[in-house]
Image (cartoon, rainbow, N blue to C red):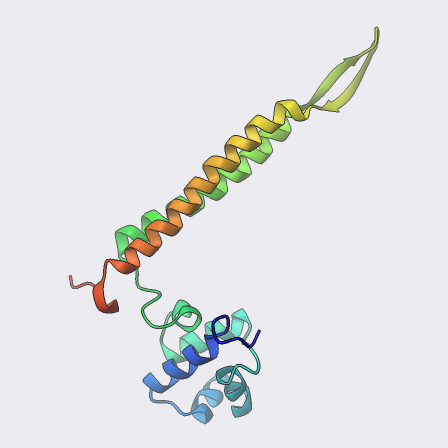
Length: 163
C-alpha cells in the first residue's frame, strides 16, 4: 500500500509534526521509539497501528482523524456531527435487531407427520425481516455519512466555527 492516494497518513504525520514545531528526533523521543520509526511512517515505508496513531495524535495535539484524512477532515459542526453519529449508531442497531428478530421469526417447532415435531428454520419467515433491516439500516448509515460530509463542508476554509 504505497500508492500516494491510498497512503497519505505519512504525509499527514509529517505535516502535523512540522506544525507542532518538532523534529523527527523530538517526536520519536516523546513516543519512546527510534527516530527511524518516525521517518518510516513519514516516508510511508511503514504505517503506524491504531495505538500508535492515538499516541501520535496526543503528542502532536491533533485529532486522530487529522493524521488519517488530513487537516480539516476532523472538523464537523457539532449539531451535524451528533446527528451523523446518531444515524450511524441507529443504522447498526437496525442491522442487529433485524438479524436477531429474523432468526427468532424463522425458528421454531414444526409439526412433522402425524405425531412428530421437529425444530426448523423457515427462511421464508426470516428473509422479509432481514431485507427490511438491510434496506433501512443502509439508508441510516448512508444518511450518517452524508450528514458528516455536509457538516465538514459547512465551514468554509476548514476554519472552526465562531461561538
